[in-house]
Length: 579
Ligand SMILES: [Zn+2]
Image (cartoon, rainbow, N blue to C red; front, top):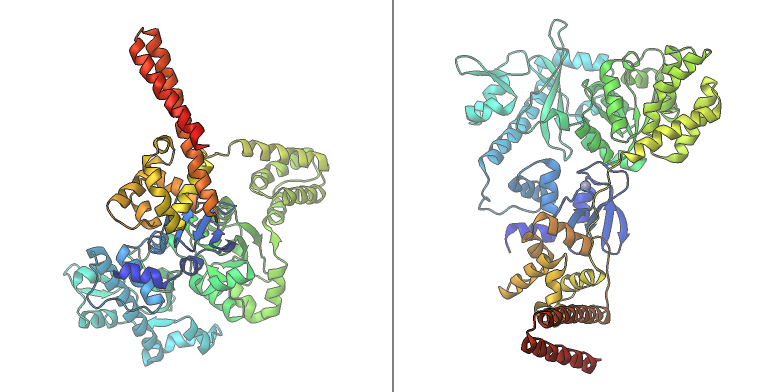
């Protein structure tokens, strides 16, 4: 067994996928959840425990546990193997697997980030870190929190980290793309971060992939400097603190979104663990999807003055676009989330959190500020302002409730509000795209399930299936051909082996047949399916014979017609005999 197979057999796919996607048990062998690879509200993504395979019936994504990690994390085969092995304490083979150049470069950049993290932490403890320690003390950050979040300090010299990395013999081809150093014209390097308080940024699986650095001197710009894009850091994919928060987000079925590192840290330290930070830029769809995999409910807690700012507005739009259930949390006194927790205490913050209002009311407030609800024109303008947001509420009951509330809120007749809401939702529904449905007969599904489910029945029915002409007319014929070819070559007929030989369209059909539902078939059911197919096939060939006879008669080929008729009679005798 090669290492890939060994690794796969020691992992359970539902556990690994379950770290990324909320899965619900849907049958003895099956889990379902929302697909991480496309946007959906009802789950069409399934994990089959017995076949150790995942499949999305919405977008077609599918594969084994290693494929899943490769696709989700956007990493190579080798990296997925390594990451899975490491996370599960399974030793990698001594002889290194062949890693491609990209994987090797990324691996070296990961190592450099680990070294940088150690260095930054040591700096913070050292004499050079005095000012940074002073800043943290002033912001009321406890030692325990500093350690939990791995905060550190990049010193002023611009030489400390590069010296360490060169001493560890990283080459300039590795150093240059690392994002940790910069190159001078003469080819020498200096540290990218200087005199900054450092926040390590982690991937969802918990690896350090970049840093954020806060300026400590007033004259240093920008105030926050982040790692540039590197082979391991894609800004648009990462949310700060998600790897720590994700368990809490699932448990509480809600995330809290704040803006800055210090907000995420302060709110976590106050006891709210489901918090992530966007770090100042507006959210991307990949970030929202990463959140949504853990819960589609989110409370947005931006800085008080920023609620109308462009970045927040765009973030809110992106959250609605991705179908998140969104609430807005407002803090009084002009305090940011970190300050609020420290000055008012955790229970005051919790009160605000629980009192966060659905996005809609926040929007209605804004509409009322913009337009005069006492005039007819004002009312119409308010309604128009709110309609796009209403269209995004997918739950009918929620929509009605909100329509009701809004009517009362802005003093418009209820019927009018409901009417315009209904219209806009109906228009939207018509635009929805319906994917074409794949059709498989019941018998095809039975046979495929039997073939992969039970070796004994498989051996019993395969020889007959191979001779059956009816199969060549099935939608699943190429799947059967792959099975027959594999059998003829003496290979073992497993789901993986067959699946690997199919084109994408046929992979989807196969998944449709054997992964969508748990099919526990008795031997009798399977044999009945074979009989029914045989009958259908014979029926069809008799119809063909009859057509040929008619044709021969029309052409005056009597001898031919006679011989065909004898064939037909034989076949009908056989049929009667078989009954
Ligand atoms: Zn999908």
